[in-house]
Image (cartoon, rainbow, N blue to C red):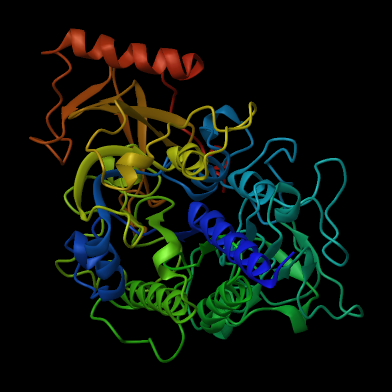
Length: 522
């Protein structure tokens, strides 16, 4: 064979390889925590989120984008599995020592992409359980099953939330910097060890907390649950954003020559909002606003890395949040006192924990430079649709036992059509609601809300709003605050919405009574 023919064949092979890469764009999910619809400046927020705003201008910013649930664990479950979390009774707010709630036999979006040639990574919050229900979790050895068993080649994360023990990082199934002579024990029912708690030693705290968050103190912050040991492994909250970001940046740099899926799930702006010193006081809203500034900075650094490595044009980026906002969630951080005119939920009522729109309608931005048709879309889209849409993107069929509640809305996410979902199901603390078009229906039961600071009027900081038969009906474009119940005027519309819930979740169609603290996950 002549050298000329070899050169031609080599060039053809190279072009074919480039074509394959082009058909498999990198995929980055940037998943905020407790960030509300109105928190980014492109959605009307008062914190300058210039990096996020730029992505919104280059891509599609959705006004009708939803997470699936008003709390973290259920939404994260749905995002990765393409299944509504209410179908899995274990998918509720988990303690830090809960077993893995995703069946490794069910292909997640990470496992799907891994099986189709993608490098996959998790950096940030997990909160989907670790280990098996069959035996107690041993934090001092290899922790399995976990992210690896559900599709992530690389993982660097915490077990649950920053306000729940164990307050350590876990890399690929092992606690980082663990000293074998100082083993970790975790218990959510009774105290282990003799570490000081927020209740017994409040003078050691740099952040005052309620009783629920008043257990073992780590880094001057008391947490939910008790832990002992692992002192060398315990994280410093102030460094958390940098730590997760650096791991994500390293992963991007290490995968310049092959397609990758990055699930970047920083803590911001979940409590405790203890940001790095260089960001403290950077906004007028106090720690919560400062955490939003940190989140935007992280987005900017990721985009910068993608550009420096030449991968930006071939990367699909999704920015959204796991649920609506909460200003007070156990720690006295002046979130309520310093909010000013900033409305974290935007025009919508409620926030985290509630079935009002603010609980599940969240910022939702999709950008693929050069492919997205920039604009603002009013289409109804849900995070449960991302799995099926990604499958459509890579041109591979969905596994039979995964993603059954999602729809392939790739054209919608890219701004090629304004058509979205016909309706969306909203979950809050095991209860459901449904939006179809501009109509919103809340079935009988109650709406549970986190009020904010504890007061003498409520005693607990929670409010239960009873929902009588036949439920509540609102027209959202005319009544975003969900104040005018139209149920009596439109019985046929009520029936239509009830039929949707009966079809999707017949066991939920009759509504539920108010929930106690144990059912709330506390």
